[in-house]
Length: 409
Image (cartoon, rainbow, N blue to C red):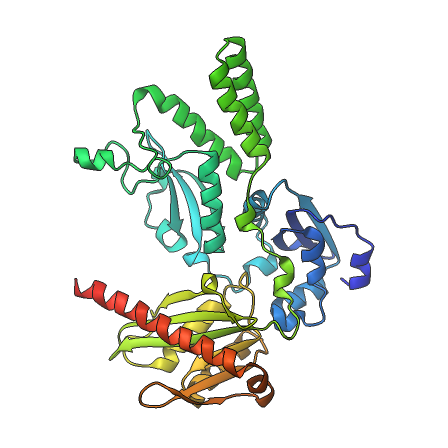
């Protein structure tokens, strides 16, 4: 598909889901957007390969058209995107993807159903008979956590670790987490209302918000007819909340992915361990010269059981680059020397990415003595690279100590 062909299509500046279609109208790729207009246009930037990946560039070239579905909110776009990817299994959404670490939403099949967040790798250990409904995977853990905060404001649900009624002490019963410690405890009198709430949560994650609103409108009419005006007003507020979802926390400016040359994203990586024990890796981010702690990531090393920093770095980079929903950096900084720099370049080649790599060489006291990398990159971003590297060292040491202390106890 060409930029000229896209120009003929009128795209709204609203949240929604977009579909790149192939020659036979098959769905190649599905994504969500805060602004469909801005997001879809961004796929036709001249530096798409560098900013996203060669895979996405190939998808755009193969695409013959774009379709969209408008949603009322970014939250609903996020849910719709997940449901559609799961049902259509688009070629370019599923290539080179491992969703074992992604979050899933599970509603348990119990007398008092719980709403749980479960990692993909942990789903296999759950009894299928114990799962009533299952939604996901949701690739972005950060966005999913923000989304659940919004959902909690719309629907109150239990998410305790053990089934309700299995508590072995009065203290445990008193700690039931109902909508973040509202303080209510399940009783026979409110079970019917709770099961209706579970039904509404299921409908919401199925993308059937209008059905929930219709149910609530009927409920409000019944209360009004019975002159239960206080109850009717509560339901009215629920309807208003559903039709005016406040999801500012989910709104991300799509143009962030395609920055100007002065607004550079630098990702720094560091490995920490003690003689190979409790080995961890981290990713820190400096963007436009500013620290972005919300984008920091931790990695427990799984493939290495002895001191081997380059092998651990390879694992971290491969896992990180498997997340094509994360914005790609313009510079990668590794802690070490030529060996670490070379392993990063090997991983990037494997993912068909062309991203400059720099290595921060340290002395015996772990102070930077020089930086290896392209001169043009070092000239422009030397200080930001050292900042990102210092953050990576601090972050990795803290994560390693945390894991080591846990293993001791």
